[in-house]
Length: 273
Ligand SMILES: Nc1ncnc2c1ncn2[C@@H]1O[C@H](COP(=O)(O)OP(=O)(O)OP(=O)(O)O)[C@@H](O)[C@H]1O
Image (tube, rainbow, N blue to C red):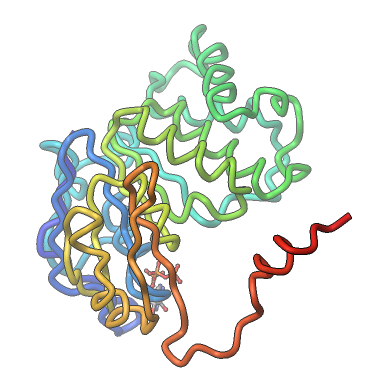
């Protein structure tokens, strides 16, 4: 399903947060949303999923104008994984995932017969089926993040919006999550801070700076050393992975302080017993 945010302007507490943002995401495309802290990534995602009404512009999910639609209509098309997962809700994991089915239920029915197996499948998909009976507050941050992703999958979305979804996840689960997002084949917009991960898993990248979209394009066109330095104030070497051909970004401060040696030479000469 196509997602289009046209000419978006958002002002919060009297401060302009987004200005003239135009972003069109093709059906099935994974777009990484990049930018420094405070550049407007979460605000743009919140505007797309109808949590913030923009002062200017329009958002469409397919042919649905989100501000002419109900919350339920939006939730049938679009699922969200936010940064602030509930941690105090005294529900068990399976019940949390079942909440993802609510937009698809009829108003009179509490649950459908197929909801339970579907919820379990979603937990299995994110490697969290073993947690199904645990209470949400007893989970680690990374376990909770995977459960919230399972809830988003249970919504059977055609559009998935993920706000820094790799927060709290160990490296293996970061890669698993981004591979899963690609495998799903749904349209996805993913706010990320790790530029190398973004370059590896996203079809295109959209770079925000102080509320404006600087550029949108394939990773190799967006992540140039000049642009990374201009937007993040960080020196950057863009390397190509010798085996995968993907981009690797080596980042250093512009006035780089003395950094510890990686110890490659000494370990080669003096193996640790
Ligand atoms: N309710 C609010 N009232 C006033 N300003 C706000 C509000 N919400 C967000 N902002 C401001 O809007 C700007 C954009 O915030 P946003 O959370 O969208 O940035 P972000 O790119 O997601 O940042 P981060 O990488 O730190 O998560 C920030 O300067 C933030 O302080």
